[in-house]
Image (cartoon, rainbow, N blue to C red; front, top):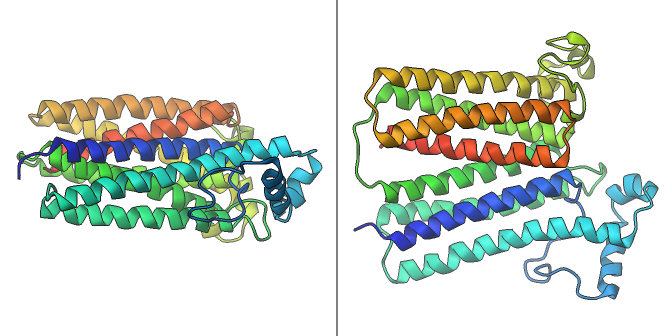
Length: 339
């Protein structure tokens, strides 16, 4: 089956929408808007309250939950404040609905017209399942902040965030399979190293979710060392007795892992870049590596300043956006070394 550009554009539009959704999700998190909608309905939540009476009702429902009762009740939190945080959570969910429509309607059309080959069709079914699972992960995350704690579980936040990144990467991979149907000679050592680098990058994204969920970027706002000139701060050992808990639930421990793993990501990408000099690369492979090196240094620098300035909204959001670009370059580079 010859290359169908409309299918490629469809998949790439899905990538763009997932990117927008992650950006809006970042704003939602950084503005503490994620718990403003206390229920989920497929149809009736499609648009925000359309009258003052409905806004008041939604606000009264919000008042029944921990975020208002334990935090915002003390902040002179009024209806206009509620409308602001409601907007970002609603917009985040609205984009999710748009993604569903943008995927399903063209998918059915391409299916009827037999414009998707069997291999791509199977991958599209995987994407459909990933989209549905991502929606579940979103509600699973929100639900954790509506019980006792006025905050979502950082584990569930990291799951929701990372799975969005993975869904994006897989969608891009499927599109790249169609963009580059010809097969090149695989450089096995570079392919293996790129796979390891991608795995570590995803682990770093997971820890980025942990840092965001625990607000761990608001402590130890120093670099290159943590507070008090310590590389491994004493507070890491004080938060929990177990090393597993210290490095997955302790604020200091989670920040330590995230900031230390950043060096590993930079090191692996530089190692991949210089190792590639031993081989004759295609133009696509070289461009992928060049983009990786550029973006990893931009991302590292943003990470440092985000920490030093204690996560202002614009810096935290930019740091998350560039992580997306870095994953894009990593996915593209691995694809070009794999096929």
